[in-house]
Length: 303
Image (cartoon, rainbow, N blue to C red):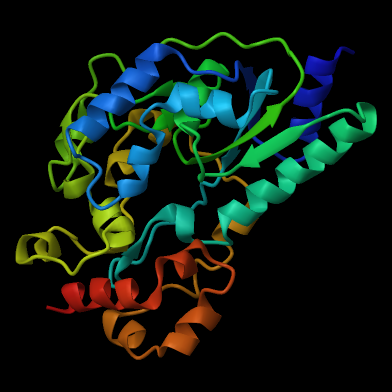
């Protein structure tokens, strides 16, 4: 077994749903698309994106030793539907913090590669840092970018977390897959706020997920009206996707650990103190959101 095969085997052994190998640099099409997006100002208050405007140069300066990128996806889908009587929480936040889970799995992979090849240098990223993870996942042959700007993995769907591990070995790269959305426009038509302004074109400023998670300011009246019952995140474009409806299979059960615990009314959530918030969400990605923004969302839904 060669090193590429062993690395991919170790990723599967660690529990990841899929794994592939990408070059450490991105095709110019992704860099240009990102620059077009930032030039249009569609990132809202996520000003950190501008730091990575010259992405190719940034990666080369930061990781001159990188020869390959192991890209993994972890299925977080959990069966069951959110109770209609409670404010809605996106499916990805029904369980334990994915940043920690995916990072732990990647660390296991790294340590086993290190045991095989002591000269290994690696750097892991999980939905953070200067990494266009969806683009790397496409280059690694794991799926394609749907018209809702999310990665769609064959036989799995889009309910997936992505992780990357930069490595100092030249591994065999996977071939990208063709897009398989065809003429379908269900995600664009279902978006309740019109955030999907065109195919593969998201205006974060209109997106309910952005508003409830990333927006730093208080809501305007129109923004507060655009939550459509969502307290944290939004799954609308994923829920209507035919690929998700066809392929949904339960993933790692850790990602659904708090499904029942998080089903509460707006009034009950409003009773939480800041210390109670930190305790309830101590192992959840929601804790990163912060108490003030959580209260802002609740008060908007309470109107």
